[in-house]
Structures are given as structure tokens and as C-alpha cells.
Amino acid sequence: WGVMAKVSFVVFGAATHVWYNISASCHDETIEGTSIPFCRRTMFALVVGFTGTGVGSIMLAIRVFNLIAAESPTYHRIQGIFTLLLLVMFILAVALVTGIGGPGQSVGDLYYSTWLGFCVALGISAKCYEAFVQSEQKLHRDEQQQQKGNGEKNMDWSQDRHHHIGDVEYREFYDA
Image (cartoon, rainbow, N blue to C red; front, side, top):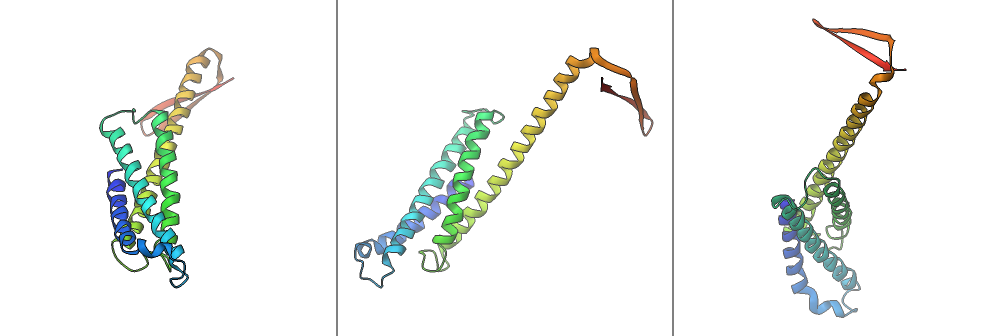
């Protein structure tokens, strides 16, 4: 999350530089007919940079100061929502900001930081999905342990099966 905050800050700074240079012409619709979309794309880059910096900083503060336990469902929900938001924003930013006619069209800080922000958002999304899958597996294992604990009285001993792994023998029992 710290990397997301840093990269988004660079997006914000680069977009601010572009905005500072073009803001006077954004109100004049007669400039080549493309100034309005260019200005809107620059404003979108500012929003993406500001949002990414804010969200990254908030999530970093939550983790550093342990405001919400990292294993809690609430943390995973918050992280999932923020991750989805940033992923969608950076997908759009890559298309609108670095595409033809966008403020990050030419190679520079805005171009690289937008693409890097997309890659970081993709990485965070992958980690978030991995954590979600692991928590679901843990929940499933816990439910099975609870069912085994409650169902030991109803075991069908006729279906007792022996398994050998190396020199170790173990048994499986199936619920009746």
C-alpha cells in the first residue's frame, strides 16, 4: 500500500504540472477542438492520483498502526473495496491518460507512473484475491473440524479404512 501511495503521488504531481501548463486554455473551446477532452483527461489524472494517494495512505496507516486486525473480515472487505476501486481507476487511467490524445501520451513521469500504478493495483488485487481464497479455505477447514467434533458419536465403524503412507498407517472414518 505504501508503493501505491507513492506512485499515485507521482501521478498527482505530474498531472498537476500538466494542469498548471494548460489550465488557461481549458476554458476556450476553440483551441484545436481537442482541448476539452485533453483537459478532462488531465483532471481525471488528478483525481486518480489524489484518490490513489489517499487510499494507499489510509490502508498503510491501518496496517502500521494496527487499527483493524489484518485477519479480520472487516479488513478484507475494506481492502477488497479499495483494491477494486483503484484497479478500475487505473485501468481507465491507462486508457484515457496514456492513450492517444491524453496528457500522458508522451513518455514521461505521467506515462510511467500511470502504468506503474496500474501494475501495483494489479499486484494488490492478486494479493487480495489470494488472501480471500486462504480465508475461505480456513473457514471451510474450521467448519469441517467443528462437524467432526460434533459427529464423532455417529461414526460408522464398518467403513473404517486403513491407509498407508510410507511406514505410517492412519484411518479414515466416514459419517454414517
